[in-house]
Image 1 (cartoon, rainbow, N blue to C red):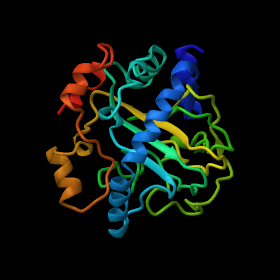
Image 2: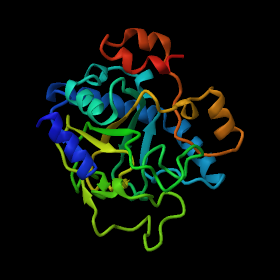
Image 3: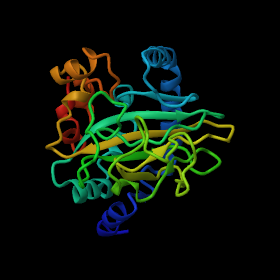
Length: 280
């Protein structure tokens, strides 16, 4: 598939899938490592989520684990972040000098609950820092989900609403008249793909966590690419914008800790430019 076709798919449908980004002989090792890291950080993660819920914020879906800036814990997947097909697609939709704004892991454990319809930062209205609706007709952020497990209706492949990236709002906060943000949507479909594939989508596209009906965790990486001109400071812990907009207001945010300097120095040379704005 050419970059022109991928760009067109994102423009029309809101998403495309690139196959075989992570070689099959590497997937199991990366998946097992990510799962172990998420389990090791579960107690701290759940405590943070519980605190946010006590303050009235909606945080994900039960049975789903996550770990922020997982590249600080492992770099096993790092060589693939500069895959030419992904970077060419990012440049096609964002322009030159795109950079990574998020590197998380997400684990849907067997029996997890369905999530609510939302869009990603900066469109998620539950975040303290977000763009108010109606949204401008431009792509400000490119999200990607790296499938470390097979994605299907059985394993909990992400729910998406094709074409919703062209709508002016999403139901992440108070919802939209006539839309139940917790209920199935008449136009929804589930993403399917083999382990090693990557879903790329316009961050405005409505999507939701799907229940994992299998007996094994469904493991994924969430990596987002931003244009050089998008202000990421509200999402970086320790920056003045983050302190003012999130910490001092008691708000919820999509946020990232800095990348550790020794981690950055060990990254492949073609990956370093994607992270140097995040270095502690």
